[in-house]
Image 1 (cartoon, helix red, strand yellow):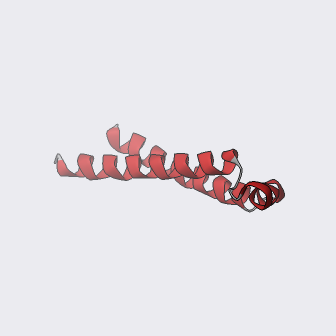
Image 2 (cartoon, helix red, strand yellow):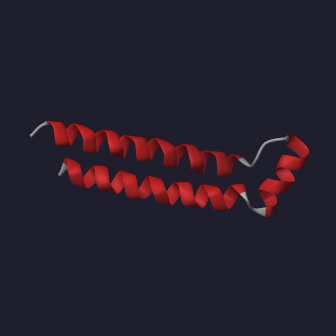
Length: 68
């Protein structure tokens, strides 16, 4: 069961990273970068969430693999 959750976290993390990349390159993010110097909060949160979910999934896979 832990392996299934880990795989779901990895897949979910990759999806979040994809949508974060799309939000990062969007027109609203470009406008935000012009005026504030940083992308929109949505883009940042999607990328950070994707990285955290992917790392959690990879860690779960490593731990579940070591128990055998």
